[in-house]
Amino acid sequence: MTAISEGETVLALDLGGTKLLIGEVDGEGRILSSKRYPSGPLTQRQAVDLIYASLDDYLETTDLIGREPAAMGVGLVGLVEAAAGRWLMIDPGRKEEIPLAGLLEQRYGYPCRIENDVKAVALAEQRFGSCKEVEDFIYINIGTGIAAGIVAGGRLLRGWQNDSGEVGHMTVDYTGNTPCVCGRFGCAEAIASGGGMDRRLRLLGQRYPDSPLLTLAAKGFVPAEQLFAQAEAGDPLAAKIVTDAADAAAELILNLVRVSNPELVVLGGGVADSAWMRRELPKRLKLPVMESVRRGLTFTTLNPASAGLIGAAAVALKG
Ligand SMILES: [Zn+2]
Image 1 (cartoon, rainbow, N blue to C red):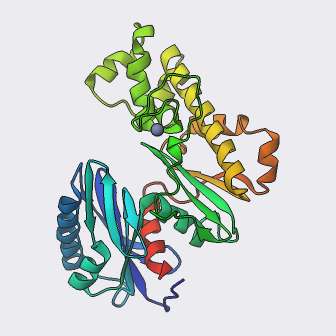
Image 2 (image 1 turned 90 degrees about the horizontal axis):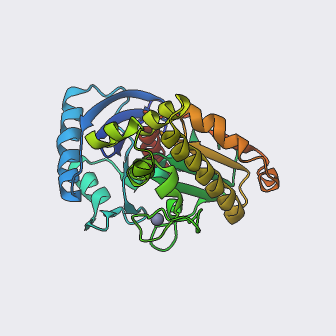
Image 3 (image 1 turned 180 degrees about the horizontal axis):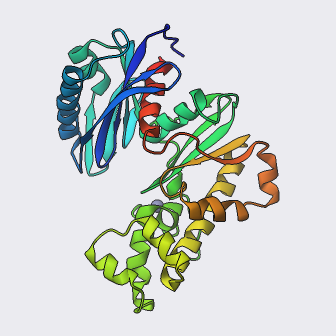
């Protein structure tokens, strides 16, 4: 890992589906300043242009608190070849090999590293979060989608294509008929993610014609917090969707524990971090397999609004 000296900072960039966050972070993972720029469903080229324009603005309008930043780190959606600094794709429909780390180094003059956003948060858990003393852990992000960063023997599992951790596409209900975007049925992401729950609302809706959720669904995407709230209020359609989601998430966790024998499982992401999941998931994990996880299941202590930014800082500091 890169050690930075007292007073030095790094520049961190977290590109998400709706926003680009840019911030200055110190060696302890504290955000000294940050600024938010709107993003959207962009191609990779458009995203690079957004990063340039936003970073130019940030450096022009924000006084750096440290001396010159020691490095720059970027967390990105999709597939990232971290060692070569190449951003390979957002999804199969948006696929272009971009040497982003090199481009940013040339333009701004700071050493730059890039990483997949979920893997970046796993590195932040390792450096600043719940996993500082832990060699073997799994960070699972349950938000709009599902993915994980698996750390074994202190090293982040990558795979030859850097495509490890796409655990949302592990089947957890092979007898069910919930289709997934990947072409299989019963994937964890199709049942337990925010995107999956919204799709299930539409799939199951005709069986529950009186549910007020159908009016909401007709207007657009229904976020998971609405489903949790309606389930608490007694709506049977919402209750079915969120109960299945907790069951599916629990099966996924139990399966993953069998893969890498972690000491600790850390959950993050907007869906996992809900009061519903915090209450319901642990109940479903009281099984012998979890006894091997000696530090148990925990919810991330990183602030969900800035976990991606801290992740990008951890990438910069990884060196
Ligand atoms: Zn799938």
